[in-house]
Length: 290
Image (tube, rainbow, N blue to C red; front, side, top):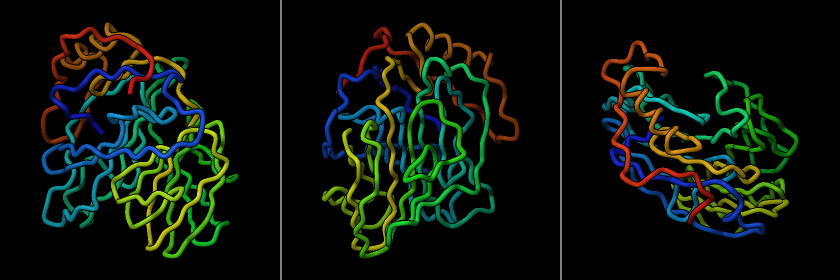
């Protein structure tokens, strides 16, 4: 999924400076952002108060939207550098004959320096492991490992992503890795996370130092758990590019707009998305900023 902002901000992030070494409850409100021709998303990361959760650096939540009489999601071809995209329950270009509802999340994972030039690859996993050992909770492990269940998805740094389905009346505790920082996004329903009620489309940042997480649901609910070791490298994130310097970002932008390096997407009915103008301020890699 592309960041379609025509004037994207410069995001300087990475390092441990703003990672809470203890459990916290920091509510992150979404920013409503148009995407493509007919889709509106709730952008949770990057957020005014929190830039990353582990290596997770971008989270869009969309739907549920009735697209029975609409074209659905329509995102033109666009580039990426230095990141891994993770799509959960959607396609970026809805087929002409599509399901009536569109609901899902799009996420980016920042790649560590040792792996950020890895060759492009695509994985599609239809059989992901489930955690069903706690009454009322069904957890699908998207990436990483939770409660002994490990996803086959490729990861380049210690992290976890899991889709949590809670039945009405559920009151459970989910084991966590204390060295990870975590956040929970409410996808649907009405749930309390560590005692905090969350409306759909909101995210609760939880910090580090937790060995378990209390979850309670008054109605059937869906949550997205994201976590990982705090990302220790300093990076620059601008538009759809993640790099280590402003010069690197400028080179990627120039290559994309000139039709170099990134290849061609065949079969799309329309033009690629041009990269916007660079900001006047010099792009620099720094630590996390709040």
